[in-house]
Structure formats: C-alpha cells, structure tokens
Amino acid sequence: MGKRLSVAVQGFHPSSFLSEETARLRELVQDKKVISAVSGGVDSTVATLVAREALGDKLLPIMIDTGFLRSGEPERVKERLAISPTSLKVRLVRASGRFLASVKEEKTAEEKRKKFRETFYQVLKEEAQKEGCEFILQGTIAPDWIETQGGIKTQHNILEQVGIDPVATYGFKIVEPLADLYKDQVRMLGRHLSLPSELSERQPFPGPGLLVRCIGNVTKEKMRVLKQATKIVETSLAPFNYEQYFAAVVENRFAKDPALKTLSEVAAEALGLPKSEVHVDVFEDRVTGVKGDQRCYGLLAGVKLSEESRETYGWLQDRLRQLQTGIVEKFSDITRVALLVQERRGGRHLSILVRAVSTRDFMTAAVSPVPWKILKDIGQQVLKEEDVSRVYYDITPKPPGTIEFE
Amino acid sequence: MTTIPVVYVKGQYNHLIVRNLKELGVESKLLPPSVSLEQLESMNPDALVMGGGPQNVRSPNQLTGELADAARLIRKVKLPMLCICVTHQLLATAFGGVTEAARKPEFGPVEISVIDEGRILEGLKPSFTAWESHNDEVLKVPEGFRVLAKSSNCAIEAMRHDNRPIFGVQFHPEVSHTLRGVDLFKNFLHVVEEHKRT
Image 1 (tube, helix red, strand yellow):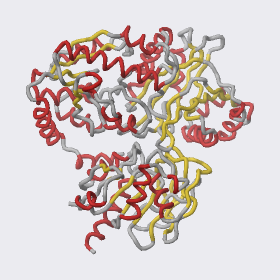
Image 2: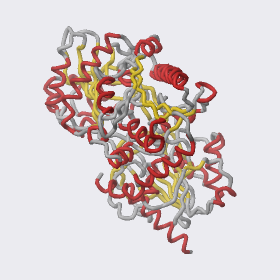
Image 3: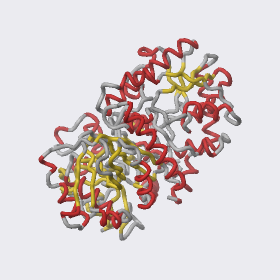
Image 4: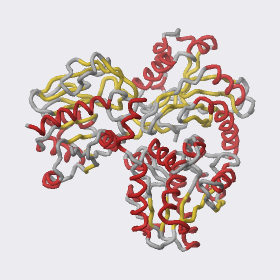
C-alpha cells in the first residue's frame, strides 16, 4: 500500500483544508453557539478541533453515554480530552437507560440502528434547547453517508443525506466539517493539528458502539459478556497494528433450512478435507454484508474442523480464503464465514466472534492473518466465562462482509 | 487542468473514484446521472468516469431511473469514458451486448489475467489482483468492442471500443486493496491527454 500513500499526499492538503473549512464555518455559524457531539474517536475529536479554530468558546463539546461504550470509556475520554493539547471541557450526558430501553425489543440490525439514531438525536435536541444552540457539529466522514445513502446500513449520524430535515424534525442544523474525508485523511489532519498519536491513530469505534457487536436482540447478559470479551480481544491484538479488531457476541441458535444441507460437504471440498472432518453450523441471527453494492442481511456460517486439521488450517490464510469464497459463491444467502477456534463442551449458549482486518479507508477490508496461537490464547481466556461455549475467527473480507457485524 | 466528473450511481466506491482522480491532479466531483448535457458541457469536461451501483441491468428496457439516465449519458456523450462495475455492464448492454446473472459471483480479491492491454491495462500484464463485488457479469461484448481481461470465474473483466476511447472494467480500480488500480487511472489519463490534443 506504500505506493498509494505517496500519491495520497498530492490530493489532500491539511493546511489548505483547514483554512477553507474554518472560513466556511465562521460564515455559516456567525455568532451562534454550537454543540459538538464527541465520542473520543478521531473523527469527532478532529471535527471539534477544526471548529474550535473557527469558533473559539462558542463551541460546547458534549459526550453522550449511551451505555454501549466500553467499560470506563466515558470517564476516560472526558479526562483525556481535558488535557493539553486538546484542552476540551467535555460535559457528560448520561443516557444509558434510555438507549437500552429504546432497542430492547428490536432484533434486526436496521431497527436497532434506527432506534439508536432516534434516541441519539432526541438527547441532542434536549441539550441544544437547554443551551440555546442552533447548530450541532458532528464528525461524520465519507463512508458514513455513502453507506447510509447506498442502503448498506443506517449510520447513527446521517439525517440530511437520507432526506430527514434536522431543522423540522429536531430544531437544529447539522454541521459536518469532515463529510468529504476518509479516515486516513482525518488522521493526517489530526497530526497537522498536533494531536498526540494515541488520539490521531486511535482505534476506530462505531457510533452505536457495542450495540452493533451484540448480534440480534440485546440483553444485559450478552452486553456483560461482550464487554469482557472486548477487553480480552483488544488487549491481545493491540500489539499487531491491525487497522480494526474487536469481539462480537451471538447466541447459539442455528438455522435449520434444508437448502443448507450440503454446506458441510461444500466446505470440506473447498478445503480438500474428508467430509467427516468438517461440520458447518449456520446461526439463526443475521449479520450485515454487502454484495454487488447491495446490502445483504445474510447468514453467518460457523465452520468446525476436527481438532487436528484446525491446528494446520488455522495458519493457512489462503485455504481459509478458499473456504470462505467456496461457501459464499454457492450459497447466496450466506454473507459471512467464521472458523471455530475453540469450544467448551457443556458451556452455555453464547459464541464470541473475533474480527481483525486491514483497511486504509474502511471501504474495503482484508482479513488480518491473526497467528493461530494468539487466537487460541484469546479462546482460552474468553472460555473462562461460563456463558460462552464457542470462540470463532471471522474469515470474511469486505465485501462480502462489512467490517462490523450489524 | 484536466476535468473529469464522476457519475454517481449510488455505489459505495463512487466517491473513492473522485479521491483517486484528485490525487492524480485532476479536477473532479460527483455528478448525478440526471445531469443535462448542457450542464455537463458547461463544466468543460475532458472525460467521464462512471462508477458502480446497487442496481442491475439484465433487462435493458427496464432500467431504473439512475441507470436509465446513465445509459443516456453513455449513448450521447462523445468523450473518453471509463465505466466501472454496474456501468461496465450498462456500457455493454447500451451498445448491444449481454449482461446476465454471474455463474459465480465475485466478492473481494480476484486475480485478473490481462489478454490485451488495450492502453487502459498498459503495464499490467500478465496479471494483477483486483477487488470485486458483483452478482451479474457481461456475457457478450457488443459489436465493435473487444475483451481485454478475464478471471477464473468471469470471462469479461475488461473491454474497450475498437476505435473510440471507451473502456469498461468489472473490477474496482478505485479501492485501496486494488494495489495497481492507480496505474489503470494513470493509463486512462494518458488516453484523455491524447484525446485533448486531437
């Protein structure tokens, strides 16, 4: 990818972007107050710093605690942004109860995302009214509106681009200084604004947070298990410099569609293994994928190999790639394939999925070759939790998968 | 300055085409396919690139709004043109070729074998890895076009018009995982520069 980076510099100049954008913001906002919605992620932090250059103390940063953040995250972010050079005084708005209640009965990814978006803007509306603000500033970047407009998934921060008028619906205008940029350009801009690397290179975290990694319906128990697994996966994979890596949770309920009967055979053939060594389960809860520029809310196949083959094939990325394409080519309803790393007999009803990808701009993603030994190590730690009985490794690139699961 | 608008047919990677062109020093932005020929003319474009999209073009008489508009541009505009993914299929059907559901759809990395460089694939022989995302494929190129590349699943990965600088590719040169994609855009720019001089 080195060659691409050298040409990237030609197209995007942080200093000229900054002077154009700050001028535009001053013109647009005049002397009004602006609420900035921050999450601690690089997009909203950089958007806020760009706006502060333009607006100074007319900018009021707030962070909404949605309950779907990682353990201790709201406090950590508030503290981190308060110190130099960001020096932002962030006000925390606690709303986890409201968010949890709003998604409680929802099972499908899009409904969960839409309920989240609705609650998100209701909370912002109340805050804007309290502060007498006409404008809300967001760290929306190009993939957010592209995926929402293209019908791939509803990003929580997209309204105008899909025809919802924020002024009529919520009573405020939305400002998005980074809407034309991609993640790598935002990071470049962050470095230009002297952000320390822990912020400019921070691991991305989706707006709806762990909600979109809790596949299917949301329960307190699933969220608790997911938070624990998240900590284990993030700690284990942090040294590897993958652009994105995380855990997701799904219930062990399996689809019994007769059309999927030959699945184990197809998987064995793709791997060149005897049929007796391969067994495939298909989860009942669906996951988001993208095929031919179309959203594909499809099935997730979990492939189990005999223990001995697993030891060999776990290291062979090319064979795993063949396994994944072999299945997705033949079964149009399957979007994602994961390989069983470890299981515990007699364990309870949840599975944890480990995902790690390399990507420049989050538009396409290749599966990162996590060493099998590390995956097994993660498996062992996660399986100490008695509600989990299986740990899988997602072997699907984007496309046909997406980076997140919902 | 070279100006090359990108026709936005709601594909995820359309905006990445703009990014690629800007990085190569070209003036570019997204245009809706409903743009009138007069509006297009007033921008003084040197070429046109059309991206991919979620629609399908199997039956040319039942095209949705966006693709019907894009087909009109393909037929009327006389500039150098590069059509990617669904508009590659549209290019084929607009000139009398055939697009059908792919026997084996392709998602993610695919090895592309170059048959004929045809200017647009210059320097990419014998093969390169490109990323794809398609359920349909061109089964038959129109008269006056020739096939430039294939993969193990798909016999027509790239094509061009024999005399005019019109190109179609099934894969996505604009995504970062297609490492040689930037070479394809550079080749296209060479063709555009040449066309400007004549």
